[in-house]
Image (spheres, rainbow over the protein chains, first blue to last red):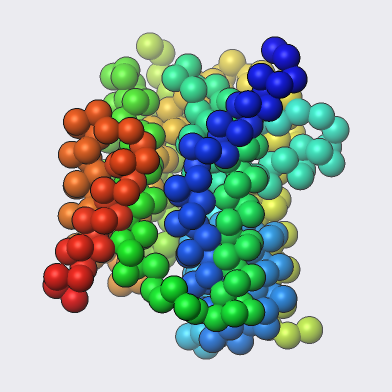
Length: 222
Length: 103
């Protein structure tokens, strides 16, 4: 492939994720504001968005601290929420290339949305889409956090705009084309059922990582 | 060092490690054959779980709120073969609308 064609596909990833990046940026603003109200200084909030780059875990950590929880409780709840990134990282490993440092840096652009958008029908991942979408989300998330942390909240609660429903709708839209086979359908149903069964009883994060066990259906012979 | 900064550093390092472990150990190579069948099903299993937890999840565990209407409307748009952007916008708009009417 020529360089310019690859470049176009990076832009394609950026363009396709753009509406979700706007939603992520507005949630970033609200994270900056929430973090400020729970004792984060602006730099700490921005550093957290730049290093953790995972919205639900950051909201969880800030909420636990705001509710008077300790370091261990905040770190444990955030880490449980992010445990899914271990299997997700394995699934995109074939397209993260180069030396160890480059792989370490590029792997940080893996988030649910860039991972899901970059998945091809055959189960492999499209590297330019992953990186282009990941970078766009990163800029939105970290930039939004900085706006919220320094400038406060002019936009109000993202939920007012229904943006909390934009993310599950995106995941649903990306799920549907992937359940073409009976095995994929079985994994989707099992994963959803496991998450639903655990959701009322377990801390956030556990339903998702437990649901990923449904992919072990893949060990069975076709 | 303050509590906040300890949490920022611990969670940041833990998340970076979780994201990096697969690419650092296996990066740039085809996945071992044993893994491929399993990894192929990771996306449907996890995406389905994300739809469930982000539509119904809340601090109190499970709640039915305006998001359900929004995601259902998004599903309707999907059934009509609407593009991704339209699905997301419909879901957000319906959620915001129902919230404005009931809130």
